[in-house]
Image (cartoon, rainbow, N blue to C red):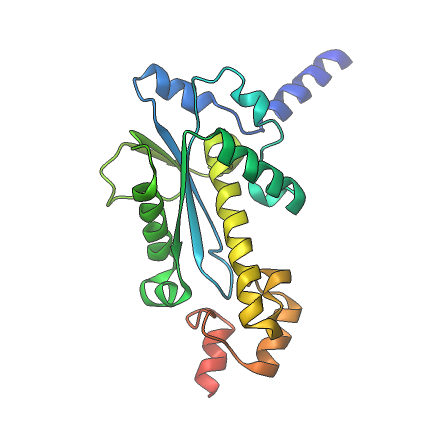
Length: 224
């Protein structure tokens, strides 16, 4: 009985990891260039929303092994993300990123900005996709068959790959912004809402890459 419980537990743990089940099912339906999309930075107070599109070589029999350890980027250490970022770029059939800057987030809201960045990433792919896998958010303006489902970066290896490309790209951009606006320590919190970030805002006010439609920026701006 104990062995059965252990086996069941192991199966649940394995099933919870990103895999290629959806991609293999789509291959059998005649799709081959399946792009996974994900974004980074939607909840940040500053900086852009970055989206990534990744097409993996599904005909590579060693693909799952090569990408072992790949997870939703938020569940990886920075060092592991950087390592997988390089692996994904090396093995991918195609990958690209799209960037929606902070003023666009303010102008068209974060969902519109995310969709813009995703469309940009798709357009930049060197291989045209024939199917899209997305984390929850559909792209009605993109005339391609697509499947958007919750926590896709936890279940689809292709979407997990996109999440790593998006996250590492955005983190690097925020490190670059730190050189221009060092008082905010963007290299540490990457624009997200931390105690240190709030303290810097109270002392220095917002800078050009802050999202003025977000709290606490909106309140700071209305007080001025």
